[in-house]
Length: 157
Image (tube, rainbow, N blue to C red; front, side):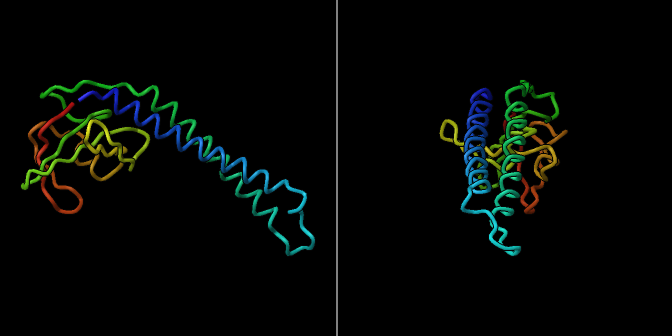
């Protein structure tokens, strides 16, 4: 499996989030500064609320810019059978019914699900419960997922 495709898909998804957040911040700023939204009395808080929203949206834009920079600089380590699982690992887990799950450990984008080459890949941050179970494990190990199901690590990239 080509992890560069995962990285590119992650960057693309973060870029989409950034564009949405930027548009929301711009709209909130327009609402906050619109002359028709200026308070008419002390209990009229529409402009104030819009200003708070604009600030929050601007913070989200900055956070996504930082996440994009991290995703772009992520070093994709190639794992061998002797390597413990860590950052940028793509681990394939299989349960007793032979259902497979793909997990990619990334410092950003946790919780995203990316569809690549017909497979759904879940991005997990190192602090996620699944990532904590995977980190330090090896190919062939069995781990218990938070829902109580045991799965075997059948592939590692």
